[in-house]
Every structure is written in structure tokens, then in C-alpha cells.
Amino acid sequence: MRLRIIVKLAVVLSVILFCIGIGFYGFARLSETSDYESADLLDFVPGDSYGLFEADNIDYFMHGFSEMAYASQLDTLQRTDLVADVLSDLNRYSFTADHGLSTQMNHLLLSFHSPDRPGVVAYFHGGKEVKRQLVEAIRDKYHVSFVPKKETYRGEKIEVYPISPAKYLSIFSKSGVLVVSYQKRLVEEVIDAEKDGTSLRKNAVFSSLHQSKSVNHMSIYGRTASLPFLADGSLDYWSEFDVHLNSEVFYLSGAMYAPDSCMRSVVRRLENIETVSVKDSLLILSGPSKVDSCISRVIASPFHSLFDECTANLSRDASYIMVADMDMLVRDSKKYTPYLPAFVSRHPDLFRPFILSVQITRMKNRLSHIFVFTYKE
Image (cartoon, rainbow, N blue to C red; front, side, top):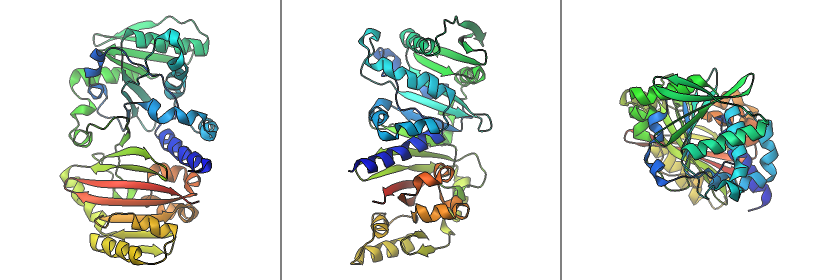
């Protein structure tokens, strides 16, 4: 695959990560004894979190990207303080033997809170040594020699490190879990969630969505519908998006879950979408019979454009499909915003070089979805 295609795909990946506040492209490969691995990080995530990022080996996905041409693009996109200062700066520690870090990345979670006042909490397995390395990295970055202020909340100790007059790093550790945030109130909410049994692990909808993944996975979870037009304002939706890269396309796969009462209304909205067809530019279809007929017709055609190929690659069993030349949709973005994932709507120009293919399939208590971005050579 040509370098320019790799760069375009990498830019898209970075945008999606930055849109939910995780714009880092490196992280320390931290690992301690296997005793810490038994702790469930989700037991500490507050139940009212509106988004979650999870990876079992962030270095697997991100280490190579840092040397690509798109790396400079990262600085033009908004990033959270926690990501910029805490996570990315640990990257250099992963290659220095004197720090004794292993070559294995720990399980990492990032939870996102309060859309009106963004806040991020990082969770990973580790104990005193990992905490020491983290504090050392921050101290070295800011050239400060700070002494932590130790506070007690509900019998638990929170260490608060003053980095500047307006910035404080809060760290809490328990049972092999290390929790880090620039908002102490969020660390207190983590303690509440763990003590009161109100963590995200206890959310019935999220728990039905969150399953064990294969190694080297990177997943995004949001309290949102798969696509805006499916939502009705309820906060009971959860959707997952597993991130995949291969030699030809970049894509997200996963599913949307909701209580049965909500899912029935979602399915009705899905079934009542009007057909839209603009040759080689836009196709929107709802209903398995319509989808099957359309894809069969395209496959049987002797002449195929790239748009046709994207259509033919979708499943005939899908309940809904959309194939869109993003250049056309960007020109009339307000009209098509309900049909686009939020991260695309927020940064439409970066997606102009792609054809977006979407399929949604009804499967019992969930809607399975795939979002495929095909680069237009």
C-alpha cells in the first residue's frame, strides 16, 4: 500500500481517538507482577461515564504511527491535559534499560466524564514502582520538585501533586489498580464507584455489550446510538467500536445495545428510513429485501466503479446500508449529519478522500454495525 494511503488512514485513526479525548501516540510499556492482572479495572470506573477507551497493548497500535508523516497533525487537534502530560510522555521510558520496564503493555482504560466540562481518568494495573515512574516522568517534564499532598477520602488516600499553580495531578491506588486524573473530584467519584458498587461494571446494558476480546485489541465505547438518527434522547444506549486497520481499509466494527423498550423504537426508526440513490455518490437503503436486491444487482453488473465495489462488499443480510462518497456529503453536511458518526461530522474535511460504507444488522437484542472507510486512490 502506498505511503500516502497509510498516512491518510493514520490521520483518520488519530482523529477518531482525539475526538473522544485520547490523542496520544505513545505510552510506556509498563508491567509488574502478574498479581495485579487479576484486578478488574471496570470495578473502579464511575457508572455515569459517557465514554470509555480500552486497549490491552496500546504500543501495538501506536508505536509505529509516531514516526509517520501524520504525527505533526496530532498537535493541531485538541487533546486533554491528562493524555498530553501523563500518558504520551511516558513513551521514552519504555526504551531505557535503567528504568527496568518490560516490553509488555498493561491493560489500559480511559474514562470520559461531563461533556460540558471534559474530564478524563486513566486506569491501569500497577503498584508503587509504576506510580514512581509516572511521577518521575511528570517531574522531569515540568522541571519541578514537588512534594505530594496526601488527602483522605472515605478512608482512602489520594496523593495530589502540584505541577503548577493551576494544575494538580491526583493519584489513587488500590488492589493493584492505579488511577490518575487532573480532576480530584473524578478520583473521588472512582472511590465512590468502587465502594458503593455503582461502577460501570454494574451497568446491565454496558455489561451485556462488554465482552472479552482477542489480544492486541483497541475498543471505544460510548453512551450513544450507532448513528444519530437512531437516537431518541435516551441515555440507555451503549455502542462499541473496535478499531481495525488492514492493507486496504480502515474500519470500525461492533454493536449497539439498549433495553428492550428502547430497542423497539430504534428498530422502527431503522425500518422507516427513506431510500436515497445518487449514482456513484450516495446510497441509503433500509429493509433486508431491498438490501439483498440492490447488492445482488450490483454484483451481477459487468462494470464496477469503486463505489459499486464498496456496495458489493456489504452483507445481503443487513437491515440497513449506506454507501457515501464523503466529498458529496461534506458539501451538504447539515443535511446528512443524522446519518454520520459524530467523529465524522465534527471533522468532515478529513474524510473527503474516503468512501464510507455502513451496514447495520438486527441481531436479537442488539444492532451489529460496521463502518468502513475506503480511500479513493
